Structure formats: structure tokens, C-alpha cells
Image (tube, rainbow, N blue to C red):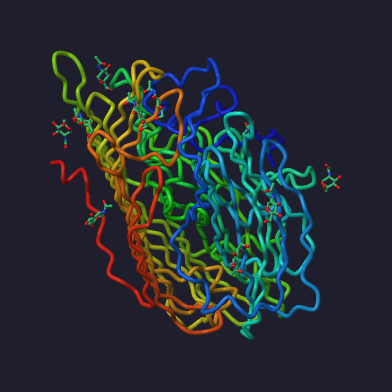
Length: 622
Ligand SMILES: *[C@@H]1O[C@H](CO)[C@@H](O)[C@H](O)[C@H]1NC(C)=O
Ligand SMILES: *[C@@H]1O[C@H](CO)[C@@H](O)[C@H](O)[C@H]1NC(C)=O
Ligand SMILES: *[C@@H]1O[C@H](CO)[C@@H](O)[C@H](O)[C@H]1NC(C)=O
Ligand SMILES: *[C@@H]1O[C@H](CO)[C@@H](O)[C@H](O)[C@H]1NC(C)=O
Ligand SMILES: *[C@@H]1O[C@H](CO)[C@@H](O)[C@H](O)[C@H]1NC(C)=O
Ligand SMILES: *[C@@H]1O[C@H](CO)[C@@H](O)[C@H](O)[C@H]1NC(C)=O
Ligand SMILES: *[C@@H]1O[C@H](CO)[C@@H](O)[C@H](O)[C@H]1NC(C)=O
Ligand SMILES: *[C@@H]1O[C@H](CO)[C@@H](O)[C@H](O)[C@H]1NC(C)=O
Ligand SMILES: *[C@@H]1O[C@H](CO)[C@@H](O)[C@H](O)[C@H]1NC(C)=O
Ligand SMILES: *[C@@H]1O[C@H](CO)[C@@H](O)[C@H](O)[C@H]1NC(C)=O
């Protein structure tokens, strides 16, 4: 493992500058366009908007219920209760003890947070020992107060939940005269007995900095650190899956609007480098086992903070993990020798295909292993492996007027397939095990107004195929599609104290997937034998004003035009529900942004609903 100590987590929006200069969530845009950050001189005086007693705002992430009813717990217990004020470098440290005299199969964690004041959106990392079990991010508070509750099914961690562990939650935050919003976090474990057969992983191994003994979180930051771990694994494994958490934060929060490095100086305003392509890689003994082309998550300070009150972005409270079935590697991994696991995050480089990224990709992973209890030695052999690099294609077009670059159009496409197939001999006989990925990517951007406006369309889609538990059943294929359109117009003030800066943003993006989540399927096979079908779209637009004596994250309003921003979301779900059965769920919500964000539409359905498709803003522009 890397011995280098991890630098502190910055807020997601701006890198390592929180403590000294930046006051504005928008610093992120100012930075990404290369303007100077707000003046460090003097502490801004914030203006109280109203003295009225407004009740705290419920800032929610749209999510399908995890079960038919949350009543009837076998038992429950609080596992984290901590007010994160000035918390840089001082995570919450506690002890998790499994519940006594409590029969349970399903475990759900209930995260509940309150905050009031001013602050950035922050990253929250929950560890059991050296294993990261939940990565969340916060909403941005308002002075009159916010709260949210979010439920996450933790059943895949069943093995961990039945023994004692150190619980470490890192949520690095500032609490001073400017950043007044502390995050008061409570996590309650809810245990249910659904009387279903469970086959949880027998062992779980971290790929992390393994810092729990020092009372620190074990997150690793790429590219500054190495994310490697070496293990001698049990010789009788019959299944192994790696679950990866990776998020671009700090200078990488908006990786999808970066440009290939050779174009960063197209305008007098700098654009960020290393391309808008990112691949998270898992290597086993230097060989590429699988990859993730990540979902472009938008945190609550992202694109425009006004878009995310009171409806936060998709996956904000539960940063998604990506699962890679490494069972085809078991013939090698069961040999009793040490094996090296490594996580990497790469961008596209037109000279070398893959290149580095900026800071900070926060990564960890967990290796889930199932043992063959009837045998002491798994055998088999790798029969096919294909890991050809993606074929990238870059189409640039610069429009120049009198020697000045006026617009920069870039289209980057990529496609890759990857596969590993082995025979595996366990106590139940011989079978073929396979892991196949097929991925497609397109990113088109048009930077105009020279460099101040950006029209963006990105679409990542793909499939992953893995072997079922039954020898006879056909392989299972999961699919996903992540289209994202955005138009962002940055209008910085020349005198940021005397006049307002503004940002106009319009966004339309979706997450569409049909999948049998591998870990849930292996843990609770009788429940997760049918796919989870999810289709959700968020779109909206707002204009956001600020000056150097003013800051209020709820202020997404254009008083000049008399218009207000709005965010709308459709959400459609069908899938298995713990305890048995298939459930459908639909929701359509719309909020107007402004000083008093309000839900103007909130419809729920007990079935899947029709979700409109995301528009391609770049095509529309043509
Ligand atoms: C989660 O916690 C919040 C805050 O305590 C509570 O209001 C809510 O009912 C809890 N949800 C469940 C399912 O227990
Ligand atoms: C944080 O929340 C807990 C649980 O609701 C409460 O008991 C405690 O007083 C709160 N702490 C602060 C500082 O508000
Ligand atoms: C870790 O935290 C626990 C609980 O607060 C404390 O008892 C222990 O001394 C700490 N260990 C280290 C190495 O700081
Ligand atoms: C990462 O690994 C490389 C190659 O082994 C090594 O040269 C480098 O010093 C390591 N970096 C850190 C931060 O440990
Ligand atoms: C125009 O853009 C190209 C490509 O980024 C760059 O090399 C060149 O220096 C730019 N020209 C001016 C005048 O900025
Ligand atoms: C940039 O966007 C703003 C806001 O939509 C618009 O008013 C302006 O005309 C755009 N500039 C160019 C050159 O497209
Ligand atoms: C800055 O914004 C605040 C809050 O809206 C406002 O009261 C103040 O007049 C603004 N300053 C300028 C110079 O516009
Ligand atoms: C700056 O923006 C604030 C907040 O929208 C607004 O109240 C104020 O009038 C604006 N100032 C100017 C000079 O436009
Ligand atoms: C979202 O997109 C739909 C079309 O798919 C459009 O009718 C609607 O007005 C948009 N909502 C917002 C808030 O922009
Ligand atoms: C990019 O924007 C410029 C300026 O609006 C426009 O002339 C050009 O056609 C656009 N390029 C593409 C490929 O859409």
C-alpha cells in the first residue's frame, strides 16, 4: 500500500482553496474558466434575506421505496450521530456492534442530516474498518435550514454487519464566520427479517489506504497516490466480485467538460485539461480486469447550485459503486500466492491514448469473495482474454475571426469491448465463467462567446455480462445509458464587488438502466433474479446572480426578466423488492428555484411511468 498520507478532502467544488479564499460555490466555474478566484481580502458580509420563521426545507433525492413497508423492524440502532462542524482531519469514530438477540436478513441504513447557514456541498465517506460502505454528498444549506433523509440497502455487507467494527465517517467541513452550516448526521441501522435464504460473501477485502487503525478514513486520492493492495486469497473461492467507488472531485468535478490538453489555451480563459473522457480501471497483477465509464454525477454545488433545491441530482446521496465480476481470474487467484489489485483513473491523451487526470479522484474498492465450503482448492484455467484499448476518434473545429479563436467545437468518440472467460472446477463441477463489457461514448462540446459559453452533449452507454449462479442458465447482461446535455453561460463581473456575476445554466440528463445488481443477486438470489429497470430524467434551467458581498444558495432567479428557474424530474422503476415480489414506482416532480424553492408538482405512482428522453443540445444547435 501507498504510505503517502492523503491530503485533506477539499469540498467538491473548489480545490484546496476553501480555507483561504473562496467564498462562493461558483468558484468552481470561475476556476474552470480560469478567472481569478474571489478576492481574499475581507470576509464577505452576508445579507439576511428574511427574518421570518420558515420551517426547514426537505431537500430530497427521488428514489423508489426499498420495501413495501418500513414498519416491522426486528431491531434498530443508531450507528453514527455526529455534528460535522470544523471537521477537516477529524472524522467521526465509533464502534459498530451487531444487534443482540435480533434475527435479520435485510439491513437498511437511514441517513438523516440537518443543516442551517451557508456552506458548500461536502463529501461524506462512511467506513466500516478499512472498507468504504457508503459514499454520500451533502446538499447546500440555506439560512432557514434544510434536512434530508435517505435510505440505503446494506444487505450486501451482511458479513460485516454481524461482527464488531470501527465505524469511521469522514465529512470534511468548515465552520467559521463565513461557512456557518454544520452538518448534523444521524445514521440508524434498520434490521428486518424477511425469512429469505441468504448467501452473503464470506470475506470482504479492502483496496484502500487501510488507515482505520489511525482513526482516519481509508480513501485514496488519484493520481497523487497509488491505489494498490496485495492479498493471498483463499484457495477455495468460487466467486469474487470487486465493487468500486470512484468520484471526480476538486479539479475533476466537471471532468465531462474538460478538453484534450492541447486545446486548453484556445481562449484567454483557460479550459480544463486531460479530455472529457474518464475510465476507472481495475487491474489484477497488471492485467485489466474491468472498467467503469462513470456516470457524470452533478453534486448540489454543480453546474448551478440553484438547480438543486429542493430536488437534488441523481445519485447525490448515494454515489454509485461499480461492480466487476472477477470470477474468471479465480484459477490464478486461488494459487496461494500474493496477487496485486490496483485502481487507476485515466483520461484520453491524443498522443498516448491514455493519460493522467487532475486531482482528485477519490477511490476505494472492496473484493467480495464466496468460498466453496466443500473443497479446499478451486481449479480451472483462463481460456480467453481480450482487453484491446478503446478506439478514440477526435474531431476538432476552431472558428477564428481576425486571428482570434471565437469557438471551439470538439467531438470525441470511443468504443471498447473487453472479455475474460475461464473454466472453473469447484465441488459442484466444471462450469464456464465470463465477464464481458461493451462500452460506447460520445462527447461533443461547443465552446463559444470565446470560451464563456459551453454547449455540451455526452452520452455513455454499455453492457456488462456475467455468469449466473446456476451452471445451466444463460449469462446475464446488464445495460445502462447516461445522456447528458448542458448549456452553461458564464458572465463574470469585471468588478465583482460593485456588480453581480451571473451564470445561466440549462441541463437535461438521464440515467437509464436494466440490471441485476451482481452483489445483491449473489447475496439474496431468490430476491434479485429479475432485473431492476430504472429510467429517470432531470432537466431544468436557472440564472444565478452573486456579488462579493452577497451569497445565498437558494437564489436562482432572474429579477430582470421576471423569470424563475425550475428543475423537473421523472423517475420510473420496476424491480424486485426484499421480502418477495416485483414493485413498480413512478414519480414526477417539479420545483421552482428562487429565494423560496417550492415544489409546484409532485405526483407519485405505484407503477412505472413514461419518461421523456434527454434532448441533445448540440444537435439542436446545429
Ligand atoms: C429515518 O430517519 C428520519 C429522521 O429520524 C425519520 O423521520 C424517518 O422516519 C426514518 N425512516 C425510517 C424508514 O425509519
Ligand atoms: C444533532 O441531531 C441530534 C439528533 O437529532 C440532536 O440530538 C442534537 O442535539 C443535534 N445537535 C446539534 C448540534 O444540533
Ligand atoms: C481512536 O478513537 C478511539 C475512540 O475515540 C480512541 O479510543 C482511540 O484511542 C483512538 N486511537 C487512535 C490511534 O487515535
Ligand atoms: C506509486 O507507484 C510507483 C510505481 O511503483 C512509484 O514509483 C511511486 O513512488 C508510487 N507513488 C506513491 C505516492 O506511493
Ligand atoms: C487558437 O487555438 C489554438 C488551439 O487551442 C491555439 O493553439 C492558439 O494559440 C489559439 N490562438 C490564439 C490567438 O489564442
Ligand atoms: C452566451 O450565452 C448567453 C446566455 O444565454 C447569451 O446571452 C449570449 O448571446 C451567448 N453568447 C454567444 C456568443 O453565443
Ligand atoms: C449584492 O447583492 C446583495 C444581495 O442581493 C445586494 O443587497 C447588494 O446591493 C448587491 N451589491 C451590489 C453592488 O449590487
Ligand atoms: C445582484 O443580485 C442580487 C441577487 O439576485 C440582486 O438582489 C441585486 O439587485 C443585483 N444587483 C445588481 C446591481 O444587479
Ligand atoms: C423538461 O423537458 C421537457 C421535455 O422533455 C419539457 O417539456 C419541460 O418543460 C422541461 N422542464 C423544465 C423545468 O425545463
Ligand atoms: C459552434 O458554435 C459556433 C458559434 O455559435 C457556430 O458557428 C458553429 O456552427 C458551432 N459548431 C457546431 C459544430 O455546432
